[in-house]
Structures are given as structure tokens and as C-alpha cells.
Image (cartoon, rainbow, N blue to C red; front, side, top):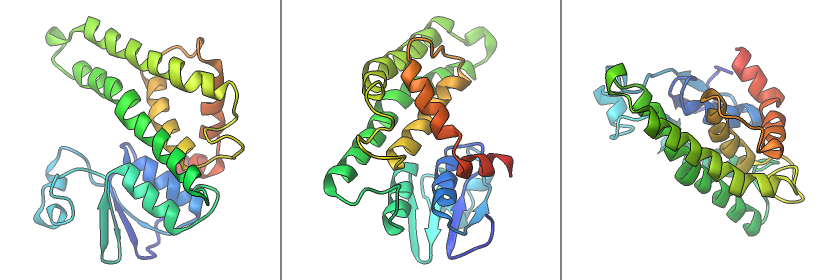
Amino acid sequence: MTTSDGLTLYGQKASRALRCMWVMEELGLKYRSVPLKQNTDEVRTPEYLALNSAAKIPTLVDGDFVVSETIAINAYLASKHPGALWPNNPQGVAKVIQWSSWAVTELEPPLVAAFREGRRAEQEIDKSRIEGWRAEALKAASTVLEPHLAKNKYLLPSSDFTLADLNVAMVVNTMVAFKLSFAEIPHTDAWLKRCLSRPALQKLLAA
């Protein structure tokens, strides 16, 4: 959707901004998308720096309210528009925060480190460091996600797809881009495919 309903998201689809776009599509929200690119002059204009002094994407503007960081943006959107994404009890909310925090503090960092190493000049790339980070990410998934998903269809027990699944799936999907084998984590693989096949995401990717 591109029609403004008081919501404006700054950030291109090929970035973490996709996480927030997916939430808005799941919620059926109308929003305006401003596809700024990270690490360019587009995020260093006085106008954008007034919204996000860190010069990072994404940033969400809702009327006179401004918030950045994907996990915070998604929590704001899902809690403001209650539905299946946002649990209706404190325990469920705590679990959404738990899983989302785990994804961005334990699983994502080694993947980001491997990505940055791979962007160095070819003669400077340390392939052993990349393999080490890849192994670290796979270990995190196999020791935390896999046993949980072997017993549960989604991350919150006795629950359908929630914001926890969306946030974590976006990070786990990065492992696919790194061509990491899911052979040892079949339940995680099946869960990820369930998440990525949701109509809201497929519509967004096809747009």
C-alpha cells in the first residue's frame, strides 16, 4: 500500500525496513513509503536527521510521533492495532519481546559480521572468520529455535502466527541468503516456510 493514512515509513524494501512493511501489510494499514537508502546522502539531509539523528533506516512517522529501530516500530504498530500479531496478556507480550530480543542480539550479530567481512576488498576477506560466524548463527538456531519448534507450530505456544514469528523469521531468513544448510534444523525450516508463505508478505514482495 502506498496511500498515506498518517503513517510514513522511511527506508527501502531491500533493508530491515521490510520487517515493518510486513507488519503494516499484516495489519492492513495504509502508509506512505519513502525508499531511502542506508549509508547514502539520502539519510544525511537536515530533514531526515531531524527525524533520526543516527542517520539510520527505518524510521516511522505517525502524525507527530516518531520512532526508529525495527523492533520498536513493530511493537508500536502491533500494540496500537490489536489483533493476532499482539498477544492480549502480559505473558504473551513478554514472550514476543523475548524472542524478538534473542533474534537481534544473538542470531543477527554473527550474520551481520559475516556480511560486513564479505564486503571488504577481496584480498582482505578472511574466509575463516566468515565460516566461524556462519557456524555461530547455525548453532544459535539449532540450540534455541529448533528444539522449541519441534514442539510448537509457532513461537508462542498454543498461539498462531504473532509478531514474535514475524520478527524472528526476518532474521532467520538471512541465513538462507548465506546459503546455510537447514538439514540439521528441519522444524525451523518448516516454520520459516510457513511464515514466509503468508499472503501479506507475498503481496509485499510481489509489489
